[in-house]
Length: 284
Ligand code: GUN
Image (cartoon, rainbow, N blue to C red):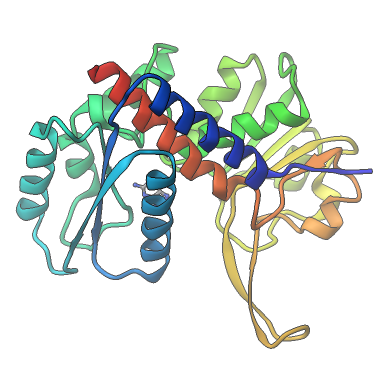
């Protein structure tokens, strides 16, 4: 029987632990979330982040700027947040509108408040194996992976996708855990064959049900990062969320798999809150 890894339950446990730590250590963590424009998916994420923060005893401020905000205006806000002692974490929701260069904005965030772990200093420290803010979704993937597979040493892991947000940092974390890591992408030859050799599959490509059941080795652990909204015309006539993996087929072969929704998604927020508490502790 396949183990369904319950990300919602693990995330809930982490948030409860954080709430206890905040109280016990008398911390007053603060998280500033910046949203530019009106991307509906981003609006939902940002609202969920604010709610979860307040439940964990973390104060949060939401800065919503119009879609036509200039880069200079956004940089001015980031500068103010860098200087604000009540703010321990700054999150600028991606993607940003065309006129704003995301890398410039990320580099302007103080590395000590970079709870996304996207700043070049934190990305560099991660790749050197030094303490750093670890990006939230990759952190969540590793926690769920260890729920199913506590000993990762020597395992063959494949990461599908090479983004700065998920693919590259999760590959670094797998390497640190002594996995043998392959990073596959749109130009990879024989993707199915590469997948079939893997004991661990991390799917982060953003294509609905792209990874087929017969790409999964018997007994592999599958972590599905994808959150894709598709039409469910046949069953309900409405839309539904699916991952990057064909869940029904992959479940027949995998030893463990994360569902969508209720897998990696809730973990991203829990890890963001964790990083914010870390930031507050370090600012102490
Ligand atoms: N957009 C999608 N995922 C993320 C994330 O983890 N952080 C930020 N800032 N933007 C995102």
